Image (cartoon, rainbow over all chains, first blue to last red; front, side, top):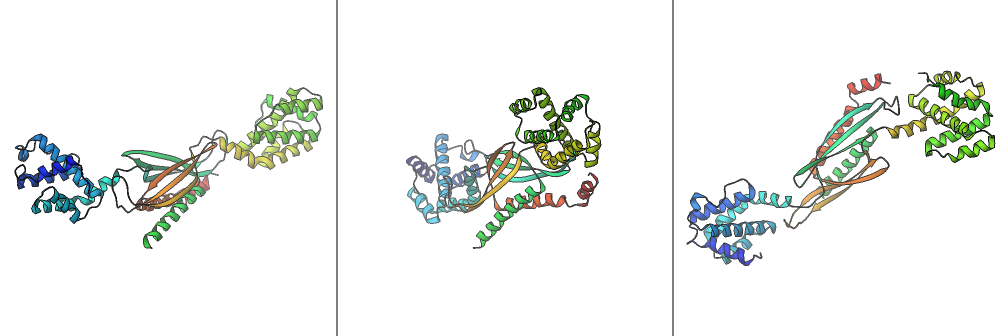
Length: 192
Length: 199
């Protein structure tokens, strides 16, 4: 795992028992993970148990630790990679284990977080429909045709929008038929 | 349902009784052509010169036919009602039959043209799909994320517009179920009753 000099320095400070005793280290790492997975959690700055540490140092260590964690998750680093990296920063075995355990515990959430940072077309989340029977309009009487109004809910980058269109029964059958083809292929692909 | 013709309309159509039935047949053909492809005023002048009548009379005759055909098609006037409706024009039996044939032969197509004028939302045209498995991204390596990319083509007036969308396998299943429910609803007794009674 390649880490910048600033991150390495921050990790070294975090490993230093003279700056973080074991209790502060445990609280600190927990807060770091919380800050990543739940956006509205307590900050490491101003935490009563960490008050005695210089706030600039605390900020530097926080940046270093989050960078390290995110980089590890991004690359799906195994235990030996994580350990050797932390040992390079002079972490004691006990501290390595503590961090690794928390990392395992939060890994799924962190992966979910990172996979959401992505550019992709609008994602369909749901579909709503309405069935109508057109009787007449200003240009044509006795139309007497059923028609559907379909509304696809989509999401992109946290913003949701809708795509509305109408279709006849035959067109809706065509649409569903093609979606079923896709679903069948998906099923076959997952079995092979 | 009988067609109610205005005095002005009757006057315009009156010109048809003054010309040969072959000419009326030709006018009918032009009227239908104009309905399909839009009108072309140059034709009026040419025809007027040949018949040595004012171009205005030809224009009124053809436009009168176009109006007669669109109104009858719009209201879906029956064969008998059409015959009764044109009776007030006082045309010969031959001319009436000619108009009836013109109407019956073109009714379906004229209704289709009129149907396109109705206000409507973008219409479904086609759907293309592709299966993808996302393997890696800038923010996260070593992924295995199946996804379905859908290209939905919608018809909006004269133009086709494609929208590229994506969804995951379980949402795709949900979409299929939901839309199948929509299709099944059309076969429900409630819908069938309404469809049967509004004819």
